[in-house]
Amino acid sequence: MDLPMGEGGYALLARLSAGGMAELFLACRRGPAGIAHPVVVKRLRPEARRDPSIVRMFLCEAWISARLQHPNVIRFHDFIFHEGHHHLVVEYVPGCDLAAAARVFSTEGRPFPIDAAIEIGLGVLRALGHAHGLRDDEGRLVGLVHRDVSPQNVLLSLEGEIKLIDFGVAKMTAMDAAEDAVCPALLRSAGGATLSTGSGMVKGKLGYVAPEQLRGERIDARADLFAVGVILFELLTGRRLFHRKDDGETMSAVLSGEVPAIAPLRPACPALLEEAVRRALAREPEGRFASAAQMEETLAEVLASLRRAPGGREERSSERGLLAGEELAALVREVVSGRDRHRSLLVRSCRRSGGLRGRTGVRRAAAGRPGDGRDEATPRTPAPGASALDDGGAGDDLEAARQAATPHWRGARPARRGRLLPWLVIAAVTLIAGALAAKALG
Image 1: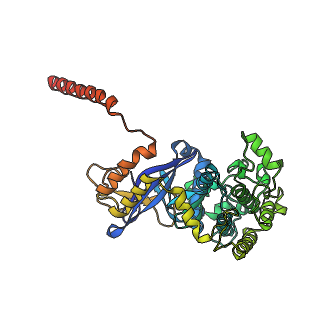
Image 2: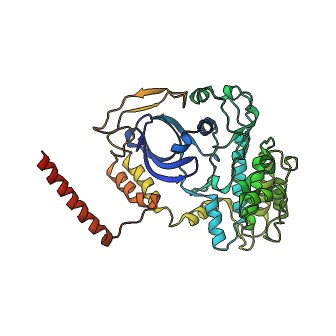
Image 3: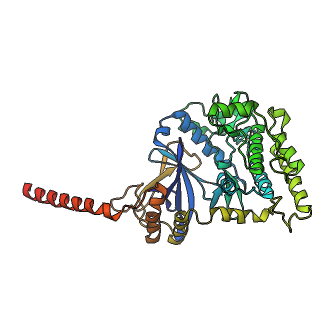
């Protein structure tokens, strides 16, 4: 399946995941001179495309993603309107999400390294600081709140990078009365209705949602800091903080449940770090840090003190679980070792193949007006019998890798030879009988 884009377009290789509203694909971006590299394509599921409010949220996510440029935020590549559907293209980050990393440590009964937890917290806070400062084209703060900061939305790369992803339920809190002026092209694409990232219902994963958000009150950037506090508590203690057996109990815990002390659960946790986490977890926004930058400053001070301490950087103590920042990449490699072999094969083959051969005629959204529904023709030489969303035309290496990976991503099991043979015989007999019948009728 191919999508249009400039020099050559994208080939969708494998579905990475599917949620209630959208699905993610690993794709190969083709460039000139045979240059190709992997990306991720996000698109709405068929049932979600029929809901105008979900479509508007997706359009707003694209507007936000295109304007956030920071090392700790997933990088925007493109936004395509193709054959009636929108596709958001972002960078591919080889590695794992924070939820997977924490799960490995929990399963093995090992404490998550304190240094690593702080490094990850710092990366997320830097991303949030940038996002909270987003301005529109007129220079006005839009009051962006992510609203879904969680371990699943923090990526850790094999190079030690920390990336905040998924602004799909983000809210521009300062723009309620003037969102039509923020992204007018997207507004027109949405059919003239008010463009909004949503209000009046809880967005995000309940165990990380701030109390004021659950109460339906007006939120600001401090709601995201509450989520960072939950993440740090869980990394340091190896325990879920507010998660309960059902949503009602989880919400009750967020609103009024006790927050246990960290020290008895993790004696090596510095007092200043526990103090910072508890401040981020204050039930009322006024009790939290005033900004992501202020919380970042406190965590940076904790990290510096840990590295200055005896047994810190050079002689890390297994009891304290210290890990130097540059070793975060080693931690990620340990977590993903032996996993996602098929995905790695696809990525390598994408880079080697230089993309797909024999492209089709394509169209893409008009430049500078993503998602306004009006396509601009881009001349291409069509492959005989192919459409713009065909699977055909892959280079040999890439196609072989795609076929090798398909059972893995779709969860299919190889057919057992003993069971397959009778069905092949039946199919062959049926085909022969059909051919004879057709000949007789002719």
